[in-house]
Length: 119
Length: 156
Image (cartoon, rainbow over all chains, first blue to last red; front, side, top):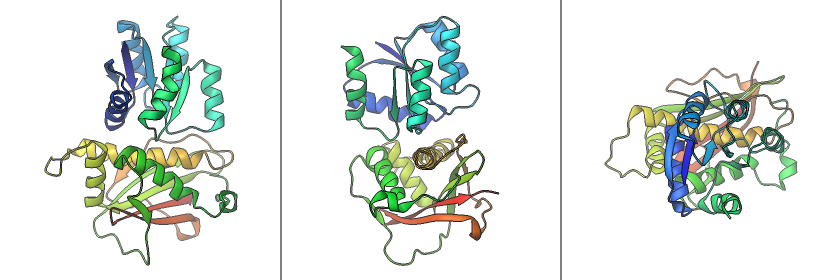
């Protein structure tokens, strides 16, 4: 499975990747530092899943999701974000996100959230 | 942030400590128990680093982390699972401390009514301007015995 991880923080991208491994996901990972770069990679490489931060420069996560859908890119996208309020979850859901994982997260949270979509 | 956080809603527990404890347990230490409230009067920070995020909107606010540079280096090493002798690059140092502020700030934002957008984190050696009358809440923490202060401010 090929996954695109988008976050403007290199440190957070490393933590996300590390936690995916800890959760048992031995996936091929591509990284993007903002939504615009993530959109380019999504168009070029057609990953199976996008894990995106919300608050990023150039293009934020919700803008990325909307841009993907507008371009006819139906790759599933889940948010991994520091903003896990009910309001943000509603926005994510309304835009068509698969899930929203709030930071801080654990490998168990990743498994509990992502496993149902892999079944 | 339109008002101070109503602490009475949290059954006596400081919600800022709860947030910080979750961040450090999950992201930095990989286990709970290494963060506690600072006992006694917190000392002045001699070689400070500051990281903050702002919440925009009708009543803007700031979540500010203040700590010693050496503590920030240790936090970076822990976040990246680096060895004690590994050199921490400047970019990773700023990124790591900013990300801690981002995650704490994002969770604090979820506690307040009518928040605006969360800004990208900023990290500096100089303290950002704050006025004492704008202090909403301050919590001094001990992480592995090292001082870390989280403060919430209303902005003009």
